[in-house]
Image 1 (cartoon, rainbow, N blue to C red):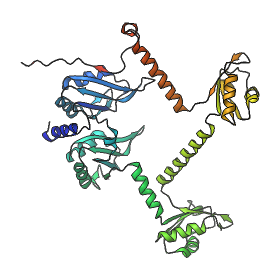
Image 2 (image 1 turned 90 degrees about the vertical axis):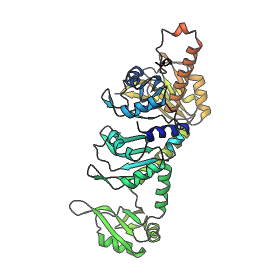
Image 3 (image 1 turned 180 degrees about the vertical axis):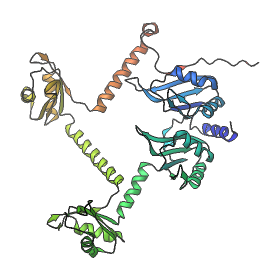
Image 4 (image 1 turned 45 degrees about the vertical axis):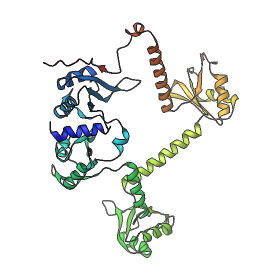
Length: 427
Protein backbone atom coordinates (compact mmCIF):
# COMPACT_ATOMS: atom_id res chain seq x y z
CA UNK A 1 0.00 0.00 0.00
CA UNK A 2 1.42 3.40 -0.93
CA UNK A 3 2.38 5.83 1.84
CA UNK A 4 0.43 8.76 0.31
CA UNK A 5 -2.74 6.61 0.12
CA UNK A 6 -2.35 5.56 3.80
CA UNK A 7 -1.61 9.12 4.92
CA UNK A 8 -4.58 10.36 2.89
CA UNK A 9 -6.89 7.87 4.59
CA UNK A 10 -5.63 8.91 8.04
CA UNK A 11 -5.93 12.64 7.31
CA UNK A 12 -9.47 12.36 5.98
CA UNK A 13 -10.45 10.13 8.87
CA UNK A 14 -9.13 12.49 11.51
CA UNK A 15 -10.97 15.32 9.74
CA UNK A 16 -14.13 13.38 10.61
CA UNK A 17 -15.24 12.77 7.02
CA UNK A 18 -15.44 8.97 7.56
CA UNK A 19 -14.55 6.46 10.26
CA UNK A 20 -10.98 5.22 9.79
CA UNK A 21 -11.85 1.55 9.37
CA UNK A 22 -15.30 1.76 7.75
CA UNK A 23 -15.93 0.95 4.08
CA UNK A 24 -18.94 1.56 1.84
CA UNK A 25 -19.57 -1.32 -0.58
CA UNK A 26 -21.92 -0.49 -3.47
CA UNK A 27 -23.37 -1.95 -6.71
CA UNK A 28 -24.25 -5.16 -4.85
CA UNK A 29 -26.34 -7.96 -6.35
CA UNK A 30 -29.73 -7.95 -4.50
CA UNK A 31 -29.16 -11.51 -3.16
CA UNK A 32 -25.89 -10.69 -1.37
CA UNK A 33 -26.10 -11.20 2.40
CA UNK A 34 -23.97 -10.14 5.38
CA UNK A 35 -22.57 -13.69 5.59
CA UNK A 36 -21.37 -13.57 1.96
CA UNK A 37 -19.68 -10.21 2.56
CA UNK A 38 -18.03 -11.53 5.73
CA UNK A 39 -16.60 -14.42 3.72
CA UNK A 40 -15.35 -11.96 1.07
CA UNK A 41 -13.80 -9.34 3.39
CA UNK A 42 -12.50 -11.32 6.39
CA UNK A 43 -9.29 -12.42 4.60
CA UNK A 44 -8.22 -8.74 4.68
CA UNK A 45 -8.33 -8.68 8.50
CA UNK A 46 -10.65 -8.93 11.56
CA UNK A 47 -14.12 -7.60 10.72
CA UNK A 48 -16.08 -5.84 13.47
CA UNK A 49 -19.50 -5.59 11.78
CA UNK A 50 -21.25 -5.78 8.41
CA UNK A 51 -24.61 -4.30 7.48
CA UNK A 52 -26.44 -4.70 4.17
CA UNK A 53 -28.85 -1.75 3.94
CA UNK A 54 -32.43 -2.82 3.29
CA UNK A 55 -35.85 -1.29 2.64
CA UNK A 56 -37.50 -0.81 6.03
CA UNK A 57 -40.77 -2.45 4.99
CA UNK A 58 -39.98 -5.03 2.28
CA UNK A 59 -36.50 -5.90 3.72
CA UNK A 60 -35.15 -6.00 0.14
CA UNK A 61 -31.48 -5.07 -0.29
CA UNK A 62 -30.87 -1.48 -1.42
CA UNK A 63 -27.70 -2.61 -3.19
CA UNK A 64 -25.10 -1.29 -0.76
CA UNK A 65 -23.53 -2.19 2.59
CA UNK A 66 -21.10 -0.98 5.27
CA UNK A 67 -18.14 -3.13 6.34
CA UNK A 68 -16.36 -2.07 9.55
CA UNK A 69 -12.88 -3.45 10.26
CA UNK A 70 -11.14 -3.41 13.63
CA UNK A 71 -7.99 -1.84 12.14
CA UNK A 72 -7.66 0.93 9.47
CA UNK A 73 -4.79 -0.83 7.61
CA UNK A 74 -7.06 -3.86 7.06
CA UNK A 75 -9.84 -1.66 5.65
CA UNK A 76 -7.27 -0.06 3.37
CA UNK A 77 -5.99 -3.46 2.25
CA UNK A 78 -9.55 -4.48 1.33
CA UNK A 79 -10.05 -1.24 -0.62
CA UNK A 80 -6.76 -1.69 -2.49
CA UNK A 81 -7.11 -5.38 -3.34
CA UNK A 82 -10.87 -6.02 -3.67
CA UNK A 83 -12.30 -2.94 -5.39
CA UNK A 84 -14.28 -3.94 -8.52
CA UNK A 85 -14.00 -7.68 -7.73
CA UNK A 86 -16.95 -9.59 -9.21
CA UNK A 87 -19.36 -11.02 -6.62
CA UNK A 88 -22.45 -12.89 -7.88
CA UNK A 89 -21.82 -11.63 -11.41
CA UNK A 90 -21.48 -7.91 -10.52
CA UNK A 91 -18.32 -5.85 -9.86
CA UNK A 92 -18.56 -4.37 -6.35
CA UNK A 93 -17.59 -0.72 -5.79
CA UNK A 94 -15.69 0.02 -2.56
CA UNK A 95 -14.91 3.41 -1.05
CA UNK A 96 -14.27 4.93 2.35
CA UNK A 97 -17.53 5.34 4.23
CA UNK A 98 -18.37 9.03 4.20
CA UNK A 99 -21.77 9.33 5.84
CA UNK A 100 -21.91 13.10 6.28
CA UNK A 101 -24.00 14.24 3.27
CA UNK A 102 -22.76 17.84 3.54
CA UNK A 103 -19.21 16.64 2.86
CA UNK A 104 -20.36 14.49 -0.05
CA UNK A 105 -22.38 17.31 -1.59
CA UNK A 106 -20.01 20.20 -0.89
CA UNK A 107 -18.43 19.84 -4.35
CA UNK A 108 -14.89 19.98 -2.92
CA UNK A 109 -12.73 17.55 -4.90
CA UNK A 110 -15.67 16.50 -7.06
CA UNK A 111 -15.17 16.15 -10.83
CA UNK A 112 -17.76 15.64 -13.59
CA UNK A 113 -16.81 13.72 -16.77
CA UNK A 114 -18.96 13.48 -19.92
CA UNK A 115 -18.80 12.09 -23.48
CA UNK A 116 -17.38 8.80 -22.18
CA UNK A 117 -17.17 5.76 -24.42
CA UNK A 118 -19.78 3.13 -23.46
CA UNK A 119 -17.06 0.56 -22.74
CA UNK A 120 -15.54 2.59 -19.88
CA UNK A 121 -16.73 1.14 -16.56
CA UNK A 122 -16.05 2.07 -12.92
CA UNK A 123 -12.75 0.16 -12.82
CA UNK A 124 -11.40 1.74 -16.03
CA UNK A 125 -12.43 5.17 -14.73
CA UNK A 126 -10.75 4.52 -11.37
CA UNK A 127 -7.55 3.29 -13.01
CA UNK A 128 -7.43 6.36 -15.30
CA UNK A 129 -8.05 9.00 -12.64
CA UNK A 130 -6.23 7.50 -9.61
CA UNK A 131 -2.96 8.86 -11.11
CA UNK A 132 -3.99 12.35 -9.93
CA UNK A 133 -4.63 11.58 -6.26
CA UNK A 134 -6.54 9.54 -3.71
CA UNK A 135 -10.09 8.78 -4.91
CA UNK A 136 -12.89 8.62 -2.35
CA UNK A 137 -15.48 7.44 -4.88
CA UNK A 138 -15.98 7.09 -8.61
CA UNK A 139 -19.12 6.15 -10.51
CA UNK A 140 -20.10 5.81 -14.16
CA UNK A 141 -23.83 6.60 -14.37
CA UNK A 142 -25.76 3.70 -15.93
CA UNK A 143 -29.28 2.68 -16.86
CA UNK A 144 -30.64 -0.71 -18.02
CA UNK A 145 -28.76 -0.28 -21.34
CA UNK A 146 -25.38 0.31 -19.68
CA UNK A 147 -23.29 3.50 -19.42
CA UNK A 148 -25.06 6.83 -20.02
CA UNK A 149 -21.73 8.37 -21.06
CA UNK A 150 -21.04 10.49 -17.99
CA UNK A 151 -19.48 9.94 -14.57
CA UNK A 152 -18.37 11.49 -11.27
CA UNK A 153 -15.02 11.16 -9.51
CA UNK A 154 -14.64 12.45 -5.95
CA UNK A 155 -11.02 13.13 -4.97
CA UNK A 156 -9.84 13.53 -1.41
CA UNK A 157 -8.46 17.01 -2.15
CA UNK A 158 -9.37 19.88 -4.45
CA UNK A 159 -5.73 19.96 -5.67
CA UNK A 160 -6.06 16.42 -7.03
CA UNK A 161 -9.36 17.35 -8.71
CA UNK A 162 -7.76 20.44 -10.29
CA UNK A 163 -4.85 18.32 -11.62
CA UNK A 164 -7.29 15.83 -13.16
CA UNK A 165 -9.28 18.63 -14.83
CA UNK A 166 -6.13 20.30 -16.17
CA UNK A 167 -4.60 17.10 -17.58
CA UNK A 168 -7.71 15.18 -18.73
CA UNK A 169 -10.12 17.79 -20.12
CA UNK A 170 -10.21 17.45 -23.93
CA UNK A 171 -8.12 14.25 -23.92
CA UNK A 172 -9.06 11.20 -26.00
CA UNK A 173 -10.30 8.18 -24.06
CA UNK A 174 -11.07 5.22 -26.35
CA UNK A 175 -11.04 7.63 -29.34
CA UNK A 176 -13.58 10.00 -27.75
CA UNK A 177 -12.74 13.54 -26.62
CA UNK A 178 -13.92 13.78 -23.01
CA UNK A 179 -15.02 16.83 -21.06
CA UNK A 180 -13.66 16.93 -17.51
CA UNK A 181 -14.73 19.80 -15.27
CA UNK A 182 -15.65 20.85 -11.75
CA UNK A 183 -18.84 19.25 -10.46
CA UNK A 184 -21.65 21.81 -10.14
CA UNK A 185 -24.68 21.31 -7.92
CA UNK A 186 -28.17 21.49 -9.44
CA UNK A 187 -28.67 24.87 -7.76
CA UNK A 188 -25.50 26.24 -9.41
CA UNK A 189 -26.48 24.84 -12.82
CA UNK A 190 -30.00 26.29 -12.57
CA UNK A 191 -28.59 29.69 -11.52
CA UNK A 192 -26.25 29.66 -14.55
CA UNK A 193 -29.09 28.68 -16.88
CA UNK A 194 -31.24 31.45 -15.38
CA UNK A 195 -28.48 34.02 -15.95
CA UNK A 196 -28.02 32.82 -19.54
CA UNK A 197 -31.77 32.89 -20.12
CA UNK A 198 -31.90 36.57 -19.16
CA UNK A 199 -29.26 37.34 -21.79
CA UNK A 200 -30.69 35.25 -24.65
CA UNK A 201 -29.99 36.11 -28.31
CA UNK A 202 -31.72 33.14 -30.00
CA UNK A 203 -35.43 33.38 -30.80
CA UNK A 204 -37.85 30.52 -31.55
CA UNK A 205 -40.86 31.16 -33.83
CA UNK A 206 -43.66 28.63 -34.39
CA UNK A 207 -47.08 28.29 -36.07
CA UNK A 208 -46.38 30.32 -39.24
CA UNK A 209 -47.50 27.45 -41.50
CA UNK A 210 -46.04 26.05 -44.73
CA UNK A 211 -45.82 29.31 -46.69
CA UNK A 212 -42.47 30.53 -45.29
CA UNK A 213 -38.78 30.39 -46.22
CA UNK A 214 -35.50 31.72 -44.73
CA UNK A 215 -35.49 34.96 -46.78
CA UNK A 216 -39.05 35.91 -45.90
CA UNK A 217 -38.52 35.17 -42.20
CA UNK A 218 -35.31 37.26 -42.30
CA UNK A 219 -37.20 40.22 -43.84
CA UNK A 220 -39.78 40.06 -41.02
CA UNK A 221 -37.26 39.87 -38.16
CA UNK A 222 -34.43 42.06 -39.55
CA UNK A 223 -36.26 45.23 -38.49
CA UNK A 224 -35.52 44.51 -34.79
CA UNK A 225 -31.72 44.38 -35.17
CA UNK A 226 -28.77 42.66 -36.81
CA UNK A 227 -29.42 38.92 -37.34
CA UNK A 228 -26.57 36.40 -37.44
CA UNK A 229 -28.64 33.50 -38.80
CA UNK A 230 -32.24 32.75 -39.82
CA UNK A 231 -33.54 29.22 -40.36
CA UNK A 232 -36.97 27.83 -41.25
CA UNK A 233 -37.08 24.12 -40.38
CA UNK A 234 -38.16 21.95 -43.33
CA UNK A 235 -39.25 18.36 -44.01
CA UNK A 236 -37.36 16.04 -46.45
CA UNK A 237 -39.27 17.56 -49.40
CA UNK A 238 -38.12 21.10 -48.49
CA UNK A 239 -41.55 22.21 -47.23
CA UNK A 240 -41.73 24.41 -44.09
CA UNK A 241 -42.57 22.55 -40.86
CA UNK A 242 -44.13 25.73 -39.43
CA UNK A 243 -41.32 26.72 -37.06
CA UNK A 244 -37.86 28.26 -37.18
CA UNK A 245 -35.08 30.16 -35.39
CA UNK A 246 -33.58 33.65 -35.59
CA UNK A 247 -30.24 34.43 -33.94
CA UNK A 248 -29.47 38.10 -33.12
CA UNK A 249 -26.16 39.76 -32.38
CA UNK A 250 -27.57 41.59 -29.33
CA UNK A 251 -29.84 40.42 -26.51
CA UNK A 252 -31.82 43.71 -26.59
CA UNK A 253 -32.79 43.11 -30.25
CA UNK A 254 -33.86 39.51 -29.54
CA UNK A 255 -35.93 40.69 -26.56
CA UNK A 256 -37.61 43.40 -28.68
CA UNK A 257 -38.52 40.84 -31.37
CA UNK A 258 -40.16 38.60 -28.74
CA UNK A 259 -42.08 41.48 -27.15
CA UNK A 260 -43.38 42.87 -30.44
CA UNK A 261 -43.95 39.69 -32.49
CA UNK A 262 -45.35 37.19 -29.97
CA UNK A 263 -49.11 36.74 -30.49
CA UNK A 264 -49.20 38.65 -33.80
CA UNK A 265 -50.53 37.23 -37.10
CA UNK A 266 -48.37 35.75 -39.89
CA UNK A 267 -49.99 34.05 -42.89
CA UNK A 268 -53.35 34.40 -41.11
CA UNK A 269 -52.08 32.44 -38.08
CA UNK A 270 -51.25 33.59 -34.55
CA UNK A 271 -47.54 32.95 -34.03
CA UNK A 272 -45.62 32.16 -30.86
CA UNK A 273 -42.30 33.99 -30.55
CA UNK A 274 -40.09 33.32 -27.52
CA UNK A 275 -36.60 32.62 -26.23
CA UNK A 276 -35.10 29.53 -27.88
CA UNK A 277 -34.41 26.94 -25.20
CA UNK A 278 -32.11 23.93 -25.17
CA UNK A 279 -33.82 20.56 -24.66
CA UNK A 280 -32.47 20.35 -21.09
CA UNK A 281 -33.88 23.79 -20.22
CA UNK A 282 -37.29 22.91 -21.68
CA UNK A 283 -37.38 19.68 -19.71
CA UNK A 284 -36.39 21.46 -16.48
CA UNK A 285 -39.11 24.07 -17.01
CA UNK A 286 -41.76 21.43 -17.78
CA UNK A 287 -40.71 19.47 -14.69
CA UNK A 288 -41.00 22.60 -12.54
CA UNK A 289 -44.48 23.35 -13.93
CA UNK A 290 -45.57 19.74 -13.43
CA UNK A 291 -44.41 19.78 -9.78
CA UNK A 292 -46.24 23.07 -9.21
CA UNK A 293 -49.50 21.67 -10.67
CA UNK A 294 -49.06 18.49 -8.62
CA UNK A 295 -48.70 20.50 -5.39
CA UNK A 296 -51.73 22.62 -6.29
CA UNK A 297 -53.78 19.48 -6.94
CA UNK A 298 -52.64 17.92 -3.65
CA UNK A 299 -53.57 21.00 -1.62
CA UNK A 300 -56.90 21.29 -3.46
CA UNK A 301 -57.94 17.74 -2.51
CA UNK A 302 -56.42 17.77 0.99
CA UNK A 303 -59.09 16.71 3.48
CA UNK A 304 -61.96 16.46 0.96
CA UNK A 305 -61.19 13.18 -0.85
CA UNK A 306 -62.44 9.94 0.71
CA UNK A 307 -61.19 6.41 0.14
CA UNK A 308 -63.91 3.75 0.38
CA UNK A 309 -63.15 0.02 0.31
CA UNK A 310 -65.02 -3.27 0.81
CA UNK A 311 -67.63 -2.17 -1.72
CA UNK A 312 -70.33 -4.61 -2.78
CA UNK A 313 -70.03 -5.69 -6.46
CA UNK A 314 -73.40 -4.06 -7.23
CA UNK A 315 -72.16 -0.55 -6.33
CA UNK A 316 -71.33 1.62 -9.35
CA UNK A 317 -70.42 5.34 -9.62
CA UNK A 318 -74.06 6.45 -9.49
CA UNK A 319 -74.95 4.33 -6.43
CA UNK A 320 -71.76 5.45 -4.66
CA UNK A 321 -72.67 9.10 -5.24
CA UNK A 322 -76.24 8.48 -4.03
CA UNK A 323 -75.04 6.83 -0.78
CA UNK A 324 -72.75 9.76 0.09
CA UNK A 325 -74.83 12.70 -1.25
CA UNK A 326 -76.72 13.31 2.08
CA UNK A 327 -73.47 14.64 3.60
CA UNK A 328 -72.79 17.49 1.17
CA UNK A 329 -71.92 18.58 -2.35
CA UNK A 330 -69.97 15.85 -4.21
CA UNK A 331 -67.55 16.93 -6.96
CA UNK A 332 -66.74 13.36 -8.07
CA UNK A 333 -67.57 9.74 -7.19
CA UNK A 334 -65.64 6.89 -8.78
CA UNK A 335 -65.62 3.10 -8.31
CA UNK A 336 -62.33 1.66 -9.58
CA UNK A 337 -62.76 -0.98 -12.30
CA UNK A 338 -60.69 -3.71 -13.92
CA UNK A 339 -62.00 -5.06 -17.24
CA UNK A 340 -65.41 -3.58 -16.42
CA UNK A 341 -65.61 -5.25 -12.98
CA UNK A 342 -65.50 -3.40 -9.64
CA UNK A 343 -62.17 -3.72 -7.79
CA UNK A 344 -64.06 -3.28 -4.51
CA UNK A 345 -62.86 0.25 -3.73
CA UNK A 346 -63.44 3.80 -4.87
CA UNK A 347 -63.18 7.52 -4.11
CA UNK A 348 -65.68 10.26 -3.26
CA UNK A 349 -64.60 13.90 -3.36
CA UNK A 350 -66.58 16.53 -1.43
CA UNK A 351 -66.45 20.30 -1.85
CA UNK A 352 -65.41 20.97 1.78
CA UNK A 353 -63.40 19.18 4.54
CA UNK A 354 -66.37 19.51 6.95
CA UNK A 355 -68.63 17.51 4.60
CA UNK A 356 -65.94 14.86 4.10
CA UNK A 357 -65.37 14.48 7.87
CA UNK A 358 -69.12 14.11 8.47
CA UNK A 359 -69.31 11.38 5.78
CA UNK A 360 -66.41 9.45 7.38
CA UNK A 361 -68.10 9.60 10.82
CA UNK A 362 -71.49 8.48 9.51
CA UNK A 363 -70.51 5.98 6.79
CA UNK A 364 -67.49 4.10 8.18
CA UNK A 365 -68.73 0.62 9.18
CA UNK A 366 -72.20 1.12 7.70
CA UNK A 367 -73.51 -1.88 5.74
CA UNK A 368 -74.24 -0.99 2.11
CA UNK A 369 -75.48 -3.86 -0.06
CA UNK A 370 -74.15 -6.83 1.85
CA UNK A 371 -70.87 -5.47 3.24
CA UNK A 372 -69.71 -3.01 5.94
CA UNK A 373 -67.84 -0.09 4.33
CA UNK A 374 -64.39 1.09 5.30
CA UNK A 375 -64.33 4.88 4.85
CA UNK A 376 -61.33 7.15 5.52
CA UNK A 377 -59.67 10.30 4.21
CA UNK A 378 -57.64 9.39 1.10
CA UNK A 379 -53.88 9.51 1.70
CA UNK A 380 -51.13 10.32 -0.74
CA UNK A 381 -48.61 7.57 -1.52
CA UNK A 382 -45.91 9.25 0.62
CA UNK A 383 -48.32 9.57 3.58
CA UNK A 384 -49.31 5.89 3.30
CA UNK A 385 -45.66 4.85 3.18
CA UNK A 386 -44.84 7.02 6.23
CA UNK A 387 -47.82 5.51 8.06
CA UNK A 388 -46.70 1.94 7.23
CA UNK A 389 -43.13 2.77 8.31
CA UNK A 390 -44.44 4.15 11.59
CA UNK A 391 -46.52 1.00 12.18
CA UNK A 392 -43.47 -1.15 11.42
CA UNK A 393 -41.27 0.82 13.84
CA UNK A 394 -43.91 0.55 16.58
CA UNK A 395 -44.12 -3.21 16.02
CA UNK A 396 -40.33 -3.55 16.25
CA UNK A 397 -40.31 -1.42 19.42
CA UNK A 398 -43.00 -3.73 20.84
CA UNK A 399 -40.87 -6.77 20.00
CA UNK A 400 -37.86 -5.25 21.77
CA UNK A 401 -39.96 -4.72 24.87
CA UNK A 402 -40.84 -8.47 24.98
CA UNK A 403 -38.64 -11.01 26.82
CA UNK A 404 -35.82 -12.23 24.57
CA UNK A 405 -36.85 -15.89 24.74
CA UNK A 406 -40.36 -14.97 23.53
CA UNK A 407 -39.12 -13.64 20.21
CA UNK A 408 -35.86 -15.44 19.59
CA UNK A 409 -37.46 -18.13 17.44
CA UNK A 410 -39.74 -15.74 15.52
CA UNK A 411 -37.22 -13.46 13.86
CA UNK A 412 -33.84 -13.78 12.24
CA UNK A 413 -31.57 -10.77 13.00
CA UNK A 414 -31.99 -8.12 10.29
CA UNK A 415 -29.85 -5.26 11.51
CA UNK A 416 -26.41 -6.59 10.72
CA UNK A 417 -23.77 -9.27 11.03
CA UNK A 418 -21.57 -8.72 14.08
CA UNK A 419 -18.26 -10.38 14.87
CA UNK A 420 -17.00 -10.80 18.44
CA UNK A 421 -13.87 -8.71 18.94
CA UNK A 422 -11.28 -11.45 19.47
CA UNK A 423 -8.07 -10.17 21.08
CA UNK A 424 -5.05 -10.71 18.83
CA UNK A 425 -2.45 -12.76 20.68
CA UNK A 426 1.11 -11.94 19.70
CA UNK A 427 3.71 -14.63 19.27
